[in-house]
Amino acid sequence: MAFWQTYYTPTSVEETLRLLAEHRPEACLIAGGTDLLVELRQGVRRAPVLIDVSRVPGLDGIGLEEDTLRLGPLVTHNRLVASQPVAERAFPLAQAAWSVGGPAIRNRGTLGGNLITASPANDTIPPLWALGATVVLQSVRGRRILAFPEFYQGVRRVDMAPDEMLVEVRVPVMASNEQGVFLKLGLRRALAISLVNAAVVLRFEDGVITRARIALGSVAPTVVRAPEAEGVLVGGPLTEEQVERAADLAAEAAVPIDDIRAGADYRRRMVRVLVRRALRMIASGGAGKGAIGSRPYTRSHQRPYLWGRTDGRFPRLAGKTVRHTVEGDEPIECNVNGKNRVVRGANGKTLLRMLREDLGLTGTKEGCGEGECGACTVWMDGIAVLSCLVPAPRAHGVRIVTIEGLADLIPRQASPRGGEGGGEGLHPLQQAFIEEGAVQCGYCIPGFIMAGAKLLEEIPHPTREQILQGIAGNLCRCTGYYKIVRAIERTGSG
Ligand SMILES: Cc1cc2nc3c(=O)[nH]c(=O)nc-3n(C[C@H](O)[C@H](O)[C@H](O)COP(=O)(O)OP(=O)(O)OC[C@H]3O[C@@H](n4cnc5c(N)ncnc54)[C@H](O)[C@@H]3O)c2cc1C
Ligand code: FES
Ligand code: FES
Image (cartoon, rainbow, N blue to C red; front, side, top):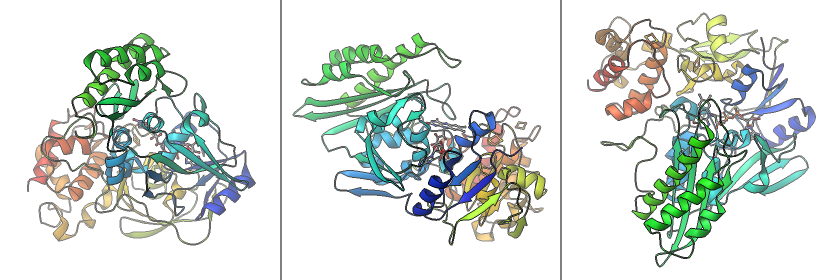
């Protein structure tokens, strides 16, 4: 079944806006697709016309102009984490981006998509709210600039007309007398939606707090501020007594719901815990200095992105807008495992289905179909992605590597073990999986190997912590992970 009928890939903002104006309300923009494809698959959304903005130039910049960070909507979560200006001047945003999903989700998922989906649990909204960010919306009718409290109108509702698109996020950066922290509580460390999250930004003058902003996520229909807690902090130093009072008042600002993940009472208690923890981190001078994320690095600070030797940006598509229709036979032309392929009849499929059904490459597996398991991991233009969340027409004009092509594409000098493959036509990591006995039913293994091999390309000798981070988006229900981790360690130590 196709989730869309027509798929446009425009190559400019002007053309995107023209298409939106022409096809609204049937049309929907797609960036990384990590929210939208799940919603289409679950039937909670309809989008007969998809307009893929992920190859429009000029929308993925990270610029610092005087005291404002200007972020393009296509900046991915991993690029936010890797960005020096973001880490230095908007640290809570970098922390939030690092907490999103797993590495392959962060390679495709964008800041713009996260803000527009507008779930109160979405992680980049609270830090941007606390920093006082604005969004710039554009349509053929002109531009609008909105602050977050105006933009967010309810659960998954934003003030954006069907013909408008987000073109920029403007973030007033933190001054040297400001400190900020983002903290998140999920059911596990990766691939976990926030049960509660909190961003705290404080400004100090001579040891006295002169401005306090606390934004809370997943505890109300939209992200909310905690004005009473902020008020109690302003005008004095950050003492333990103030920390306790502010944490109590922040918990009162929360109006959470019971759902499958947590009860309302638990969420309210956790607001108190997170706000207290964030304030204590600031009081101890620890904010902004520690490692990003809930798993601090002990030996190395290089974070695994699974984008290999690229800078995490996908190449743009040159030329005019491309149109693929489910009924038509416009070809998807791409390079798969080093061979040029022309595929017809896959315009309404995901890349995963195209690889398996049209190209016979069944090594790539479907576990969940919703980005949760990593079994479908492939490389797209050198970057690890989840093929179940990539529309097949997005593969037009790109290079794909699947498990079938992995060993052939390893140049002699780039092999982590220095050889060509691991013997018998295998990548060294495939060989190590065999030697470590890291396979039981085998269903998850292609995904682990595609993630692990990309990690080794990026960090040839990863630490245990880096390995755990690199495969955080891959699930195995049989092996218990120890042997998988050992196989990657073994390859990386060669
Ligand atoms: C397994 C999994 C784990 C996840 N974990 C987290 C998590 O921990 N924290 C979290 O916050 N999120 C999480 N997400 C959600 C998702 O990855 C993020 O929200 C992501 O940032 C969405 O970006 P995208 O580019 O993929 O958006 P898309 O899916 O492409 O689009 C999302 C929405 O934004 C609209 N849109 C996109 N770009 C624009 C634009 N420029 N202008 C106007 N509208 C636009 C689309 O029309 C659509 O409505 C997870 C998702 C999955 C599948
Ligand atoms: S992540 Fe794609 S099938 Fe599970
Ligand atoms: S080996 Fe069976 S799911 Fe991993």
